[in-house]
Image (cartoon, rainbow, N blue to C red; front, side, top):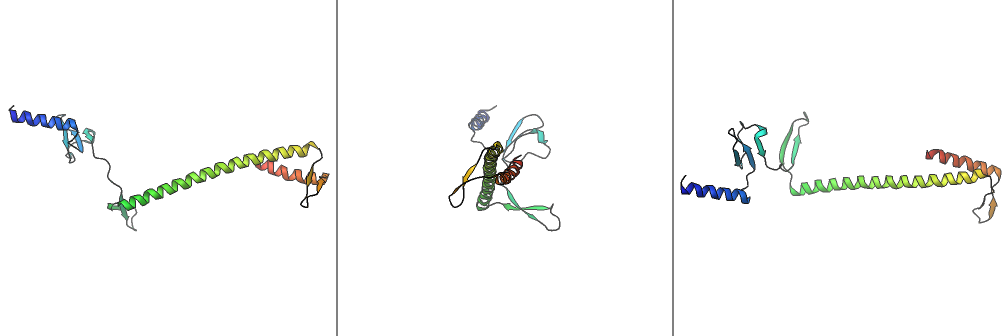
Length: 163
C-alpha cells in the first residue's frame, strides 16, 4: 500500500468513527463486507442483509378514486400546517376520551354514594321507628303507616336499581 491510500483509509476511519459521515443505508454485500451509502442497496441484496435504512418518511396524503377505494395514490407530503392540524385533532379526540372517562368515573362514584344513602334510608324505614320530617310550609309532621309504605316502595325500587 502506498502512503496516499493509507492516509485516505485513516481519514475514512476517523470520519466514520466521529459520526460525521451520515450513511442512510448500511448492508452486507455478498462477501460479508459492510457497505455504507446514501442510496438504497442493489436489488440483489436480500432484506435480511440490510442493517440500517433511513427513518420512515413523512406521512403523505392519498387520493382515492370513487370507483376503487383500494387504489390510493400518494399525492404529496403533508405540509407543516396539515401535520399541526392533524396533531391538534388527535389531541382534541384524546381530550374528549379522557373527559368522558372522567365523567363516567364521577357518575359511578355518585351512583355508589346514592345507593349507600338509599340503603341506609331503607333500613331506617324498616326499623319501624317513628319518622318525622318538615313539610314545604316548614311545619313538623310524623309519617303515618301509609306514607311509610309508599316511601318503602319507592326506596326498594331505588335499591333494586343499585344492583
